[in-house]
Amino acid sequence: MNDTKDNEEIDLDTLKGELVGLFQYVSRVRHEIAAINRPADEEHDISSMGDQLDAIVGATEEATNTIMESVENATELLSGIRNDVSPEHQKVIDQAINSSNNIFEACSFQDITGQRVSKVMKSIIYVEKRVNALIGIWGKEELDKIEVLVEKEKTADEKLLSGPQLEGKGISQDEIDSLFD
Image (cartoon, rainbow, N blue to C red; front, side, top):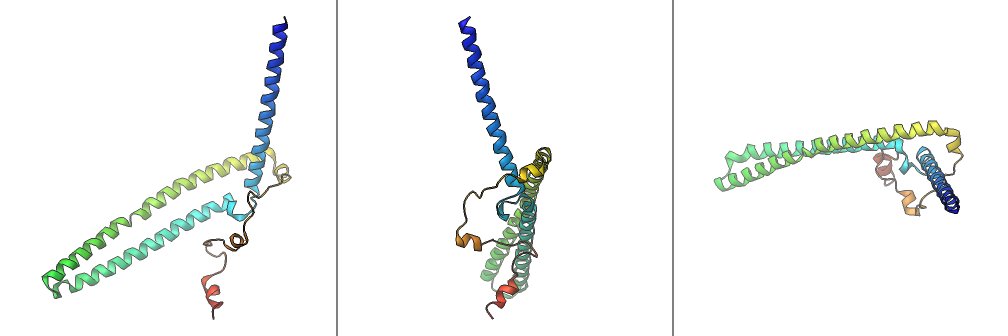
């Protein structure tokens, strides 16, 4: 009979330990959701990630188009003088045009990059929907009561740096240039 009582105490202690562990885990999840809902700084704002990824795709596309237009222009220039030069120089021009064609082929990375960024974007949207559902379950007012702590205080230099800005945000290049006039 004593063994049964000891087993019940062990099971009760195990249950209490599991409940405490589960409570701590749920509390940690609530803090994490509060941090996602109200990030300590703009770098961690999940809602701006889509804009940042769109900016990556746009900048990549723009750079790729510039590269391809420049290579196409150089190829046309070389083709234009090809018949006016010696056979040795024609071989060099042919090699340069072949290299230009390789650049064109390499620029296909932009399409692949766009496809991969789109996959990441879908995942972010999925996570954002799930987080918003959890915010709805716990209640925004309850989560707003939770203090969001900054993981690591930024240095003075880090506070000045905000990286490339999205279109229409931050200081324009013209404004920066005017500082030097």
